[in-house]
Length: 221
Image 1 (cartoon, one colour):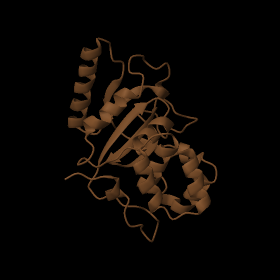
Image 2: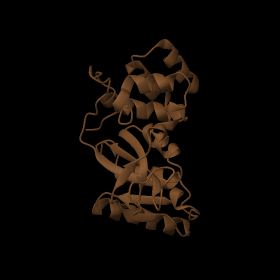
Image 3: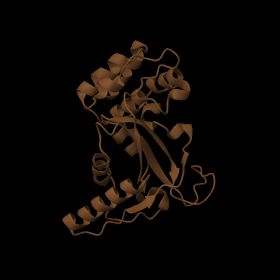
């Protein structure tokens, strides 16, 4: 059995306005340059339940945007494995960062941060396949995730937060649930140009917000 966005766009929770996923999820973490873009790319994907951005892959304690140390900007996502496989996510990963060229700054390097042995082996296999297919050295690293520190609030769902009228309204509506909301992840992807018209219609139909917010979102879509 597979699940579509309609499984995620369900009855609103009276407490927080959150739309709950329908399945157990798994987690993936990737470094792909600046984390704003990947957050939007994955957030619009059917089967991805939630996204967040943060700092990982280094050893310095308590990293922050202005004190990153040896960490890398990463996107972490939870996904429904019945709808979206880890290999599906890796395909998007390889297609959306510069794997041929090592980054001059560790902050923006390409890296897969595996959560278990299976993810590590799958990522390494796809890396080897890419190198063989293209006859090009793949500079992207495959490592084991040790820990992640969430980025500051203003980095989370940056494209949506930057949308006039709608951003502030949705931050107020979702409150503490903003970062982990499935709908917010979708909207963040949509305003960045990702997703389909059918996805947008379903998500907008689930929102209970002022008409001005819907109009601004539609303008960005």
